[in-house]
Image 1 (tube, rainbow, N blue to C red):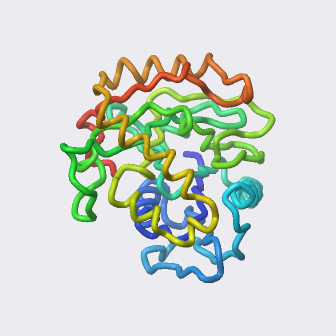
Image 2 (image 1 turned 120 degrees about the vertical axis):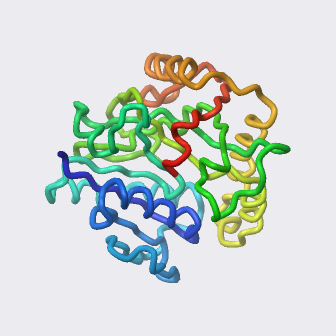
Length: 278
């Protein structure tokens, strides 16, 4: 079995980080989780016990420059982990979860240990939204996937999240600079960052994020809620197979190491076999 670490950087994000620690801790072991809090004014919650959680000097004050600095820092940390004996490092935001299709009956480490990885491995991105009129506000009382059932197949979240060699991630983990990507079959990245209208509205009112220029970004990302509310839900198996093939072959002209999908907006309903994972 390969030795695998997961790392992330957070600021004022305990809601997602709790789920991140719970999920990746169960998959990889808490001793293999590396969490960096962006700012010495943050507090490390007790739920991080058993992980490598540290405070770090705040990186930047505006979203673009801060994000570049953040990924440069995390790329360096990932390289150090690989040099220290880890075979693979998973780099994701606190609202992102790399998930193996339960139909395979494999844990995440078992699945990744069977993969032949050159520089990186990508999971097919699924951007969850809230189907307004059908799905209620998210709560802590039930798993996420008991409460959310629809996602847009999103090229933005088909990220090279798993790396096997020291390299440099681009902003948001969206690419590995200087290298191509490889999308694995039966592996998905579930993104929950904008899956609840009430939480999204609360983020718009977060003075810390607004001061860094996140308001426009968050408004833009709220489209996932509109898509899953307004568009018909398509067959998961058929359209994820299509998307994986399409994203492997099609590239945007401005970034040949990122996936594209002709701008198609495809919403799928998540099969019930996933519901107890998160």
